[in-house]
Image 1: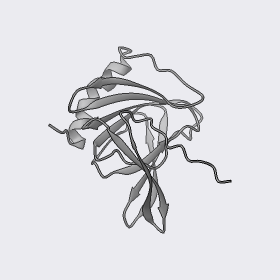
Image 2: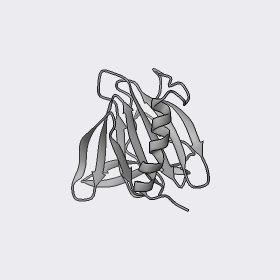
Image 3: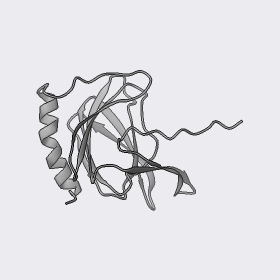
Image 4: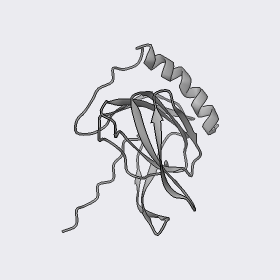
Length: 161
């Protein structure tokens, strides 16, 4: 059974409360990359805890058809969301903000604040792949699709010579 975005937000409330109460793994900061830890997985859903130091972020991506949700547990993140016709728009997501999205959602997240941030992410079904994008002429241009079972996959783009 697949959870829809609203169910993922509700399902994630329990884990968000556990993290807030200190009953989940200690959050680590990593200057080289975002730290992440899986909190839960079953055939329907996986739940991840992620820390973001200032200037850390993702690339524009989807979740391979999985629905998702995220909650900002502390700090603030800026989300860039793509929508057909409107292109890219930035949305500030502060502590306590909860966002649910369907399988076709394309976004990136980044910490542009001066303080670390922590967020919790859930996916249904659990992640198996992500596609990364550029935007060309207002339209999404896929760069690559990567098989993955965690949300911190990064696309290694060779530098132009």
